[in-house]
Length: 259
Image (cartoon, rainbow, N blue to C red; front, side):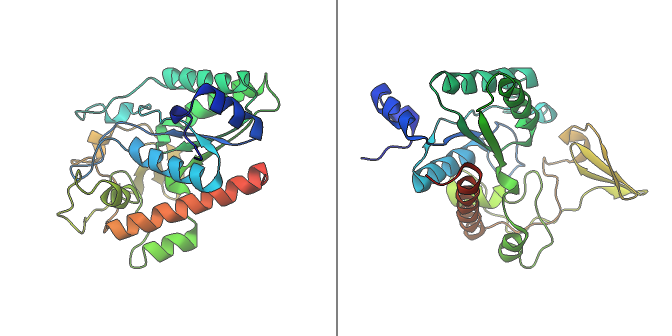
């Protein structure tokens, strides 16, 4: 039986797989609020995608790190946020363990923007010591092409944002029994006034110029959603996952070379 999950293999099985020049996918996510309608564990979506990508490409994946740096959501019950330096050190240690066993092809499947700086810091520190280390990161919710977005959201402008798309549709597809599916349309509008638009938790646009800012969700949203209007559905979620999985496999083949 073909196995792709390291956590479901014995060490001799893993040793054999490590001789085959495979890519190891490391899924990352968070435990944080996503509005009143969706579940906290967005890392579950990263897990599903990692499983699909590894199986379809005949590569390997590990369990998802379920916690990230989500300090801007700490006002919401159930959010579990790690310090950035904690996430950085965990990722450093995980990568170092693979390097110790001669594994240099790693791809992060990152489902949480707050993890990006930790990935960058850990990888760059290790690359100073291990020049053969080849790491790429797929920020999952940004892996749809423009044409794919137009296909899955034909009647909307880009509805992406926190607590909205594509994760709301994805969770309706993956975990319909745990999310609130009673609302088919969310009427939202991002804050914009006096030439200033709050783009997201980390950026403000002032008269066409993006400026980094540092906001907490409760300061800009009363329900934990920050996006423009969106219309989620399980059908959209299914299609989005199919595209994300196919896009990652295509990209890794070109980045690492097909075996």
